[in-house]
Image (tube, rainbow, N blue to C red; front, side, top):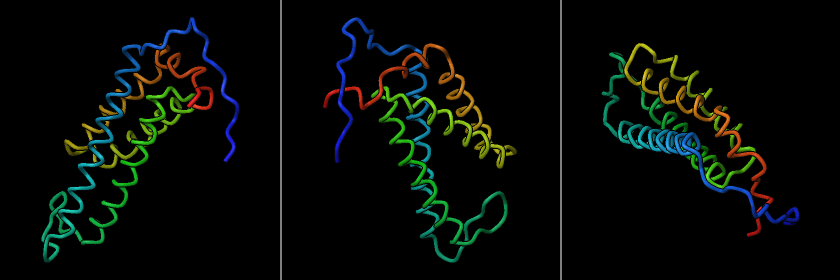
Length: 150
């Protein structure tokens, strides 16, 4: 597969990460690990016998835990891919982090009456706010992966 020609970064460019960029990367890592924990928990609940699990006080079918494990695994992989892109300052990573934050905010509202919903809401709002700061946006600008030599 052919790649676009790389150009050499400007030697005077500052390649250090700002505090908001570090905060965004940290919150994205926590989100990825939380999704991984959700996938593992869903798999553990899937193998429990007799559909004896309760979710918010109601019995839950094994189909729910199987689907939940698949979705948490998909979110973990997406977070890992976006984290890699953000770490390498890909220009599109800023938008991807914002979209993941907005998805997290939307899903947190589905379980806002429980501690899990509040935790995801705070985490997603923090990641969105840190990612929208001017210093974080400057972190992504002009540093696409295709611009760096391998």
